[in-house]
Figure 1 (cartoon, each protein chain N blue to C red):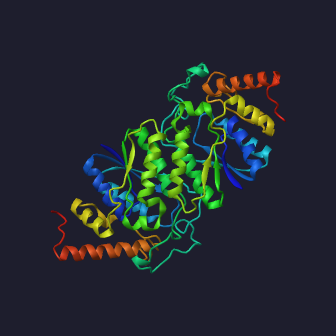
Figure 2: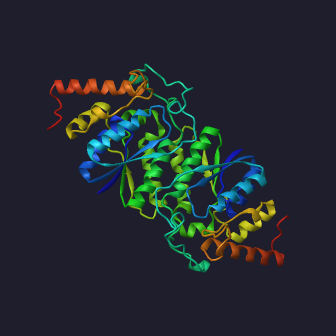
Figure 3: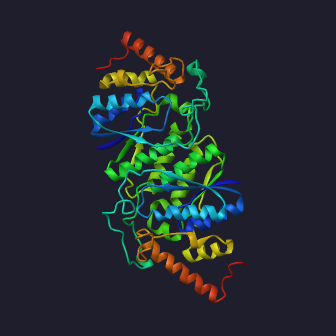
Length: 220
Length: 220
């Protein structure tokens, strides 16, 4: 099995790359779309190196304005996880449609039959292009768009919380410590207050608690 | 009505840009994907200038090999239109999925509600990503991928032959003479023998005949 993995450099895609590696050959793609949290591209490089998988950083300018690419826009801060509803300013129009389309073209030319993307339970609550309905529609599109109709997109984390992803990462010995999630870093340090930082911190806290209580065993 | 038009510089997109202009504001996008028939980008620029519409040439590298981008691959020549069945060497994996994804992101950020693409009866016979099923699936994807669910892709030429497109172009006074269709030009001259040249020549011959016979009137 040859897989193309979308490796942002964040926690989710780090764990997913480790999952994909268990299944066979992996080629990781990261997109440089002039995101202000460019440090994630360095994290992606370190993760790919640690996992010993092929990795390409692809320059792909997105023609839309978003708080993720435009420093004049405000990234929302200090929200509790339960307040993270609705589409936030960090939404980038058609971002995942564009990234997946590129990955599909790459996969068809390589003879890879699956593309893996780390969308999860938190993402899908806020971003339309992280929802199960989106991935179902994208796979339906692939059935009629390509010469090779066996190619499809898999999202193995779509029903998992951050805590569950961290526990899965520990089980797989994924290089979680190399991942980087912050939307608004300063001098490559996480802000600790954007949605990505808040969810990551909560995930580690919950994973730690469940490990302490003995309800989960990472290397079982 | 604000429309984003995919303007390759060929005959079909030239006529379609003229159609779109009748409906309102038009922004044309051409993609520089290192196609060997780069002269079409000059044609697109001339067409947009003639129609007095906004125009952007977007560099968008496609990670796949195809006879359209790789000079070591052979472009099929001297086929009769009825021999043009099956997917040819000029197929580019996921090309239209990628171009449309970019156009959709652009449209959402601009507040444009439609994207127009000149796929037609000849294209759909050979290229999966020019088929009615492809555009239906792409529009179904847009329903769940975006914040603005009113955006959709229109393909007004999908049931038309080259002859019919030329006649429509004459009716609209589209600058057909500025368009360029050849897949394999030398010194910016059409080869006359690739599928695109054969179909274009046949279209003009048939349009000429029907105008001579009086069955069609371009400016009626």
